[in-house]
Image 1 (cartoon, rainbow, N blue to C red):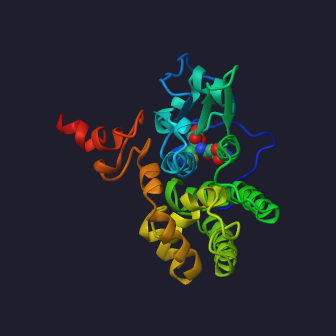
Image 2 (spheres, rainbow, N blue to C red):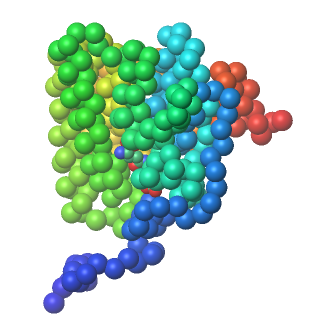
Length: 292
Ligand SMILES: N[C@@H](CCC(=O)N[C@@H](CS)C(=O)NCC(=O)O)C(=O)O
């Protein structure tokens, strides 16, 4: 007989609508739209549909870095897709990303508008389109790709694993928290060792690999991902090289702006729910909107 907390595994799994904690409960085990609604389209060629989570922030950091570096064709409209309210299941969003996860980008500068989904793919698409934030040496370029793929493969252990069980799951369970803490600490150690030898992740060039890794692991090291409690629990202060890199990147103007876009939590002056021009950072943050 199974103990109170043990799962008696049935032969065939069945969906229990109320199970799964914060994010599990807005999902279903089938893909596709649940309601009809077109996506809005602004005036710029690049249309981003996202929310200010780590995967969303990767892309807004890159777009703001491109603009900061003078690539004016990188001007973009960023529309909020509120994933807590299930907006990722609209027919328009599913057309841009059949996987119903933010971020998704549509590039209208192409003859046939091009959709791009998966944050790593969006970073690579934009960096290649503008030939920017990619290392020029073949060896560093290859390192950059390895780390970009590393991030895409590793972050689900942090977000879907550690973060889910440490913060979002309805109960605190020792087994999954232990399992994912061990894996996340191993990943933090991988990054710390790499950054002991190199200024940036791919070597000497600030690249899209840094922009992919920082919103997850940089913010975790700084005690800003899953709160200070998670940083303490994982004893992030021991990763001194990772902290050096995380602090340097956090201070960049484009990173600060990228973190504000499509953000729905935290200080109101840091939330720019929709972004359509660079003036919006001064005029359209939530604190300004609530004053007017
Ligand atoms: N591998 C995807 C993951 C995207 C992802 O998981 N996005 C989350 C927010 S960080 C999401 O949209 N969650 C909504 C849901 O699970 O329904 C990427 O990197 O783009």
